[in-house]
Image 1 (cartoon, rainbow, N blue to C red):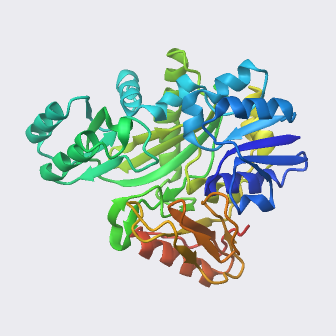
Image 2 (tube, rainbow, N blue to C red):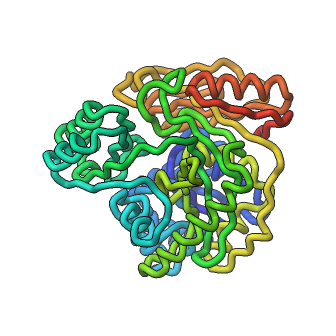
Amino acid sequence: MNILVIGSGGREHALVWKIAQSPRVKKIYCANGNAGIRSLAECIAIKPEDIHALADFAASHTIDLTVVGSETPLTLGIVDLFESRGLKIFGPSAKAAEIEGSKAFSKQLMKKYGIPTAAFETFDNADQARSWIRSYDKPCVVKTDGLAAGKGAIVCMSTSEALDAVDQIMSGKQFGSAGSQIVVEAFMEGEEASIFAVTDGTGYVVLPAAQDHKRALDGDLGKNTGGMGAYAPAPVATHVVIERTKKEIIEPTLAAMAHEGRTYKGVLYCGIMVTPDGPKVVEFNCRFGDPECQVLMMLISSDIVDLFQSVADNNLDPSAVTISDAHAACVVMASGGYPDAYDSATTTRAGRLSGSMIRQKHPQREHPSSMADSSSSRGMPMKNCRSRNTLNALANHAGTHSGANVPMSPSSLKIM
């Protein structure tokens, strides 16, 4: 099979790495890829959002299956375009991808169908948003309606912080048109987890729950980022939590989307808060998370190509998916200043890491395995190894760096 992967980050590196293990695969292309991916796939100079050029490439190069890593091409309708041309592709349609593309849509969907989430209001007028926040006068979260690369949610513990967030998003246009409408929702107490359901629109299989570390600085401080690391499985997602998430969130959401004429295929990323009242939705995403994908790919034992193709063919067999009982972790080295402005000419150095896999998130520059440039925010997501001592060291490093509590006790950590 010829496979095309779309995207250029650590997530796509992980997808390419896992796809390359399939005996069914003859050739892998990645658009537009990065220097790390080049050792496993041929990188092509087509941007992920140039969906028509990608369709032309897939048709001319006899691509048997396309796997979309990032959200932008999904919301632009790449799946609809490929399917209209008879090209097989893994991912949701544009109408289904709106579950991530519009926070207002996803919140209204949950409200309509009784899917547990925080109480919320939506605003397209900054003055009205400020007035409501002053009257609410409680901790809240201010979110952009549109895509903001995982950075469009601002946790506000005071009214003044919430008013500042409205100024940043709506008046200051920090996230451009993505912030022309906002969602303001009640602050939820609890611990977050990411639960991924791969579905063909009817059946589904749940992958190991992961937990990523959002804050940029030690002690759970600093701004939200696209993710400073992740590990899986996450202990907070107990069997009871997983079962409740399936019955109260995943299944009702898939049914709701089908009822709305937006049948969902691909991977549904359920960002949940484990509250005293049970799991509640923080957000939905229409693709694998990054860095969560990097640990998930290490824990799937079965052929990932079989899974992706079964979704594209509408014949998913959940029993065919096997999961390792090991644990995996990812730690990110980021440029100083991230997620705000930073020096893109800086080189990030990690030294030589024994028994590790470094995934590069930057575009097309070449570097040794201990280095990455800063041309794309988070420089180097890294995985590391099998002994209890090294596992504990990595877990402690991840927890210290992000402020996360990483209560991992097993003696094995997957390596790539």
